[in-house]
Image (cartoon, rainbow, N blue to C red):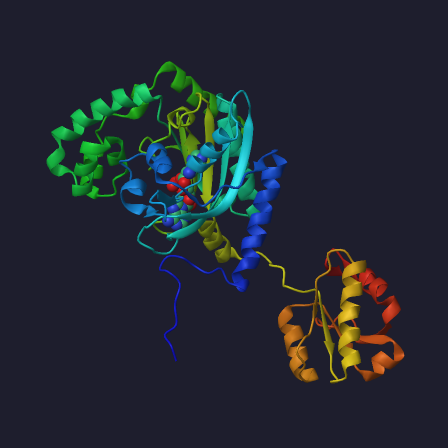
Length: 431
Ligand code: HAM
């Protein structure tokens, strides 16, 4: 036998037993997004490498170490998208969706980062992202946060995630702060971990993110970004906090929250859970008013976020909501006689025609009654319809309630749709 080929490390198959939960999650998120009037945008998964370098920043972990970059057959450098914001800005600018307009957009799809795989961290992962354009006030920052808070309620996750907020100020505020931070950290350089020493030289704000205990000790007395905010940035942040307070959304200010992508300014936020170990950030985002211009467009205010679907799935699996099984009705037909098979398939077709939304699985491929009933059981169907020679002759069907509440009975084929409709009330049986 030849050797089997396995999937790439950190890139996962989502199997049928898992996909029901993915669909459940996605449909709830889509409903919430629709309830705020957001529209979907779909972008390619491959872009010019330059796009990510110019937006995420040359001196970030993503661009320095994590991108899947390759030359295509024309010799162009392309990259599998590590995130969606840059692509979304590129697409909107390319198609004239930004100038003098307001956009509220969302996307869903795979992203790629060559990180060290572990639970909650993968090389291909999926994000649902939101990007808004053309609105500069704190009201839209609040709206995207309220949208996420509503989503946690919808998913039953409210008690398991907490919101951290920070303001990074304007780019001028950050430049002044960066200078002060470099002066302070340089004076304590010998106490910093190696990674932070490297960051100090190239992207000092990222030192604030350090996990190393020694570095964290040094950071305790470091100057705070909040002390360097301009009046405009401070007012924006206070405006956002006032709305969140009024709406009853709890948050913690985290002055060390700087995010790993360079395009942010003013508001940044993360929703964090303590139930997933080190990979606790399930949703993250912020304002990026400079990015459109940085990518060649006209200055356009923007704010957005993205959530990691795999991490939300891990949380949901821990509390497992009731999931739909694949079928409501399972049809078995026993004899080898061809007419029975055809009757079974046609009966299933007519039920799908008549009963909107009903999910019917028709047994295919033969097998004895016992084996077919086992399959019916596994399908999770509430009712099994049995078609034998007697039923065919009498134009009836035997209906078996798989939960055993209603006694098995013969129902005329012509009356079957009505019988089922009468016994299902929004998927539940009323008889
Ligand atoms: P990010 O913080 O890089 O931001 O990623 C957002 C979320 O994607 C994370 O909070 C996490 O849930 C998930 N995620 C990131 N990397 C992985 C991974 N390797 N495995 C599993 N999940 C992961 C962004 O991507 C920004 N584009 C968000 C944004 C949109 N900001 C403004 N608009």
